[in-house]
Image 1: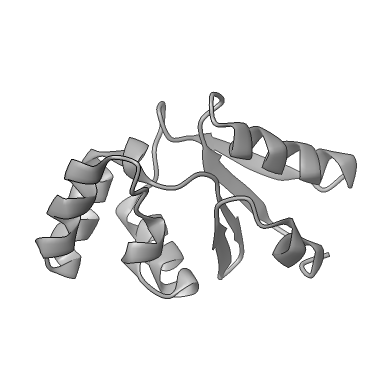
Image 2 (image 1 turned 30 degrees about the vertical axis):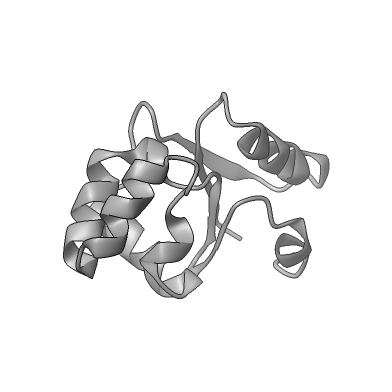
Length: 111
């Protein structure tokens, strides 16, 4: 397993994801979205794995969600790369598989 967790330290769900893998002694790489961020290639891979870009958009910011609803997919990718704080956290990748948000029931199947 090659687990990557994309998130921020202030995200409660990201911390819970880290705890999930630590408790099971599964090694993972943490990528801080507020520091390094996610690359275009990684984001595109995650979009493919989770079934579309709309499942990544955190709708807590209503204005941003409204803007994203009128953009075409390529523009949405550009906008999410600019505003990585608008991505639902954590993104957890295991090779080509990925999840968005806290999804322990799926991660258990990765073991």
